[in-house]
Amino acid sequence: MKKTLTYLIASIAFIAISGVAKAQDGTAPYAGSTHGYSVNPDANTANKSYLWAVSGGGVISGASNETSVLIDWGSTPGTYTISFTETDESTLCSTVRELEVEVIANTFYVNVAEDAFDCHDLSGTVLATDASGPTTLYFTVNLNKDATWSIDSWEYDFSVAVTGTDYSVSSVKVDAGAELGTGGSYSNVSVSGSATSSEIAVVINGPVSAGTDVEITVSNGEAIVGTSVTPDNGTGDKKQVLTVKPLPNTSPISAN
Image 1: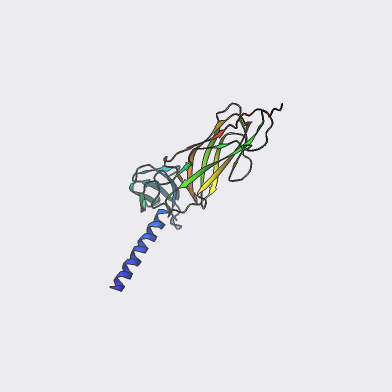
Image 2: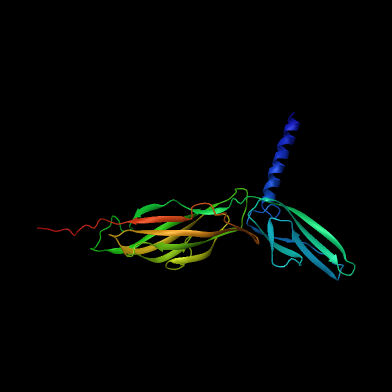
């Protein structure tokens, strides 16, 4: 009984490990992802031709008559077959290779943290009349994926919008990196695959007695493994609004 139980545990572990490995390559791509496939042709044949084909579920991107190919997998999960045909043009003899691919549902997406509010950074300080100053707001972009799926990096685009006309953006940084600009849109922000979130710091300037909303909109999330790219599946909240609350517009102290 003990030996049988040990065998069952080992079998389950093997299946789990195999499933993890399979989910990390082009044999089980996420719907919407792009993967590369290649062969080593017969080195002894001088006059030869190549042809790739896919039975469904994906579209060949670029040339289909070389020794490697890129396939953009569609949104429909299922089992499909990739075929490669090498033909000796001098004899018209050919060899066909096939690979079965299981397109699986895409679990990858990026989302943002909950909306929130904060006081102006000068709250609780001694202020001059009609004072203005900077306030730093921190937005969080979260990575969501299957825990067993190892990725090299992930990317996203984002834009910054300020609703209050009295305020302007003076600085935008991602993960304490270099200065990116003073508002607007930013593309291809890259984050290490070991990180589960990314922080956007936005510095705004304006009068302390006026409030404003600052909105971050995230789009075009991508997970990258080698040359394979998996796009965001479209779920998850993509907008985070942080509201700066005005400070009391207290008059100067008068004496009599």
